[in-house]
Length: 130
Image 1: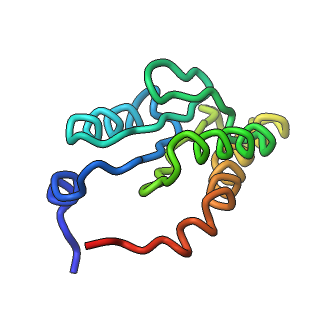
Image 2 (image 1 turned 60 degrees about the vertical axis):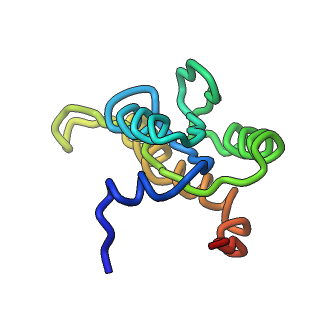
């Protein structure tokens, strides 16, 4: 049973939603949509600006661990985690440097893992109250 995303956004009330890369593009659009629906949207980005924003490079495990602790202390629970942060190098695969390759992998893959690890136990024990 798939539920249309517009219905989900309207029906879920007052949740804490953590979005990485919410300072532009798709992340910003999601942030605005959820905020309009009345949710608290916590933004993690390298250039955090605005309310509920934290400066964090998701490729840096220590930064992620520190900000996860800070967010848990301030907001208590995170109901939805959207790993949206990502980078790309616009060049041929054969022309990308090893340094840029590792930066993409660290951001686009390891960053997801660091955040998921930070909230793993929380999400495994989360019980929805109806």
